[in-house]
Image (cartoon, rainbow, N blue to C red; front, side):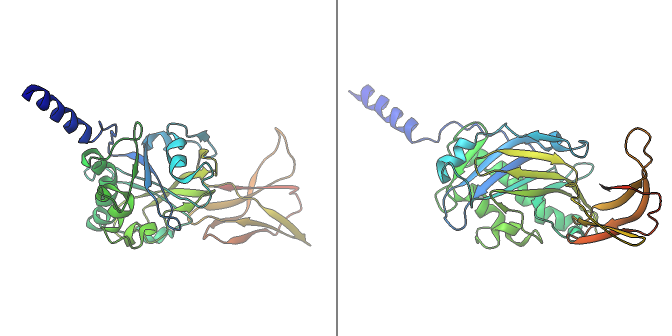
Length: 298
């Protein structure tokens, strides 16, 4: 009888223990995070692998990101993710040769990243590394490989996105609790710029890696580099104006050519212009030999 009781106790202990963890976070992994401030529910967090898969790609390179299971977040918020907020965040080791945080945002201010090393460590490294590391030892049951659904007000709240980035206050979550001088989330469906942020103390250490787009049905794609300009052209006398919608920190150059095809010679005729998030005109005042225009962005 005693042996049976001991076995029963052991079985109960196993049932009460946290499920085996499947979270295998490494510095530099991109965390894909969902929450809904207007309809509070679990934060759903994914580790979608190393940021290296998105770095160094040719401008315009586009890929579907499929190494995550949308069914997990859809199980929390429903098949239609419209209105749910999403963010993508990553950080290197603080001792890396070039410490870098990768932060999503909607047209952030490029001058806002001039942090000292200590400020960068506090604002980005400490919070983003905790986002990746805490679930491993939190006792949160793994929903699937490298995915968690965490109640930010429950027993394991200290491992949740909302708790960690706000320091437990739940204030300013969409700005990493005030650490980021811009909103890092986008309501679905929508697009998020993906910025590299480095501690260069006084310089402008931002770099636009590319853009993530997420559909209401859970389709995630990444496009490297700046979004191509969609110009509008007007001509008055000898002045041609090409209007472009700009992104902050991206350089735009107007090129002109007298013909298309293999013999075309594209020559800079207006610009360059550094984008500030608004629409601007690139002007060509010598249009005699120019019949065609295009705009490059880099």
